[in-house]
Length: 108
Length: 254
Image (tube, rainbow over all chains, first blue to last red; front, side):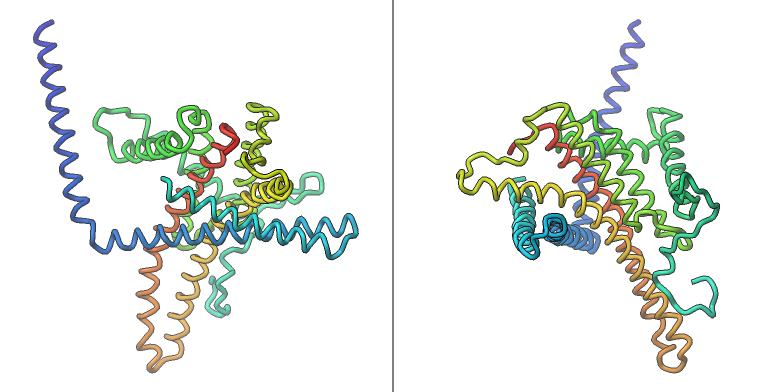
């Protein structure tokens, strides 16, 4: 019973030691990677994906507004007022999408 | 770009070819090259997860480490953006993430077909996500789900406009979600093929142009690395946006 307990304790200690060693190694590796090309490429990629997100959110709002307005005109025979009204609302929705995106990223 | 006589056509890679013709009730349900690669992607994901979790050793093998990292990563994303309650959506988010990631990555291998470069595929994914949001939101919150469209603290005069804008904004979500993934994949692959075409054309022209031909070749190497980043990043963006939208279903209202 007792030697087994000791064995388990020793194993636990070794595991903890290993974990802390891995953590320090990782920190060192990260420190080396920072400021180099790799980090630069990654941040460029992330910035590009964020930019693309803003673009697609904005454009999607306008497209959806235009589609609704167009179909509204076709069904209700209100050309061109449906398109005008819903295109304006769609643009506003696109702006709202972008605003929400920006507001979220700053608060996080 | 199969035969050399063919003109350089960067769009050719997105052609859907029917391999076996099926017709189910007037609907063309043929087995295409897209279907082949969907099956391949699903098989690869299954292989990684099944082989990775079969050993369950304390010191993981490479396969097990990859499978565990994928799990931990998605689980962390889901917990971080929805909370513990969101873990019921973990299977959905994980499947979507792995499928998108693997089809993006597989598409970078020459002579493969990129499933996610078809807008119908990405739109189907977005429709699944938004459909889940609507169905689960209504089932869980009932009429309270509609508070998603009615922000608090808005003057009564402005309310109809705000509600309309919120509704359009909600409808635009699947559109932006699907178009973003599709456009990123399409643009990246076309760019790669166009640069590849430059190499062939410049070599064919001879003289000084042939001397410069290695330049676009080097650009392809850089672009491939960049496309690798985009492939992973877009899969991640897709997963995290899925989480954000599912969060609305659980906690409607701002």
